[in-house]
Image (cartoon, rainbow, N blue to C red; front, side, top):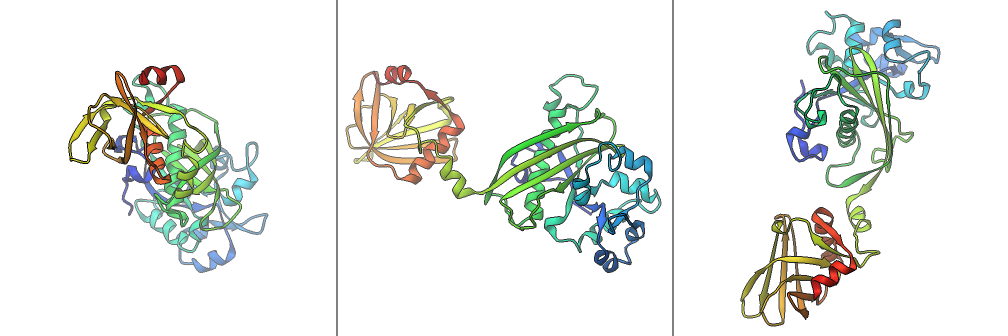
Length: 357
């Protein structure tokens, strides 16, 4: 029913090897109101919802499954239970192998969730449990490392945000304010692991600025971990402006890997000189020596992704050439800032002075 694979880009990853989740699906709510029950009377899952103490319909779960999932008794979280959804592992076990076989359960859950506003739906994912992944630290492990689940939760938060709110990939960024994880048991490599993302955000806004999502991890119908993410969702243009390193700084930086940069000087006669960029700041740069006469134009291309061009004038000539930018607008500073944040290191005053000698 679902395309199991998830694009790395959607999860803010650069490679399929980095993706830790797959098989996205809607997850079945623990509670349903009477209106939803009546509207879905034909759905076989509805028969398993019974009136509870709070006058809502609650999906009936066997006592042993309730204990394993920490729904009641010691460890229960009443606020979470109000918005909580169930992993397919528990629903299938409760409904029985015959009723829950194959895609039947998935179709029934999807049909029921159609009546729920997207902002209030929960997501289910299958964890890609692969001991060859670098989260296993390239050594034998007798359990899955906890840091791997924290990264899987991060990926699940991104996928959930882009599918159950009006926020779109590339239009916003998620800035984490709080990250809290709880581990109740070890997770084994041998058995399937399922993630469920529940929306704990108080607001029903479809483009929320503040989010609180809880990712719960289950193995063999047992809740073994939760990861809570509280974050601010920021429009990308605003984020880029506030993250510009030159707003409060006049620091200089040196490229970590100069070969990832193409740095070219050109004059009014069309002559060009390939030089190496050695230092870069808000007001100018330092390159290997060049004998092109002023006025000169500078072009820097970083990793084939960022390009910056400006007129420059020579302000020092020694072993290296020191240049001052004629004029750089905010967009130009933004490009320089983006380059520096991806592949430069801070130059202290003695190191900068040595470059300019």
